Picture 1 (tube, one colour):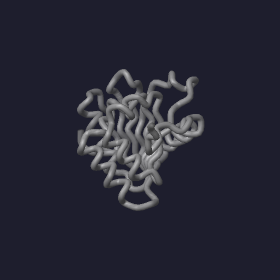
Picture 2 (cartoon, rainbow, N blue to C red):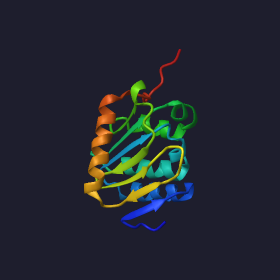
Picture 3 (cartoon, rainbow, N blue to C red):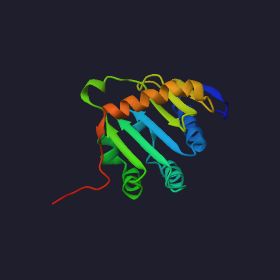
Picture 4 (tube, rainbow, N blue to C red):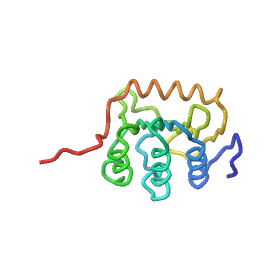
Length: 161
């Protein structure tokens, strides 16, 4: 999938390419809403490295994630959990409340201008928008509502006995 300003996708591979394109477009803020991050492959070395590069670019950078289920994150994403600990000043994760768990789409937004929108978490069908602030605005508003309605999720550190 080329980096077109607007592109559709319907395969896992094209979805992964769209994610990389939107991550590359991010300069200040990344906002992610997903069921469980499994399909985002954020713990893959290359993607975790891209997140680290993004977050290390300055104290004004932010990564906010809202998930329905934190299990995959806490059990199978050690790189992402290490980034959460290292960049806790600019990286936050929240979990949706029970009434919101039926929301079935997923999206990644960069700087309020670009994004990857998956119409339903059960399918790899969606669209990528690069430099489309007007269309992304509605998605950004939706993310902010989800953020407000969610509760703090995975802590940066685990307290154990």
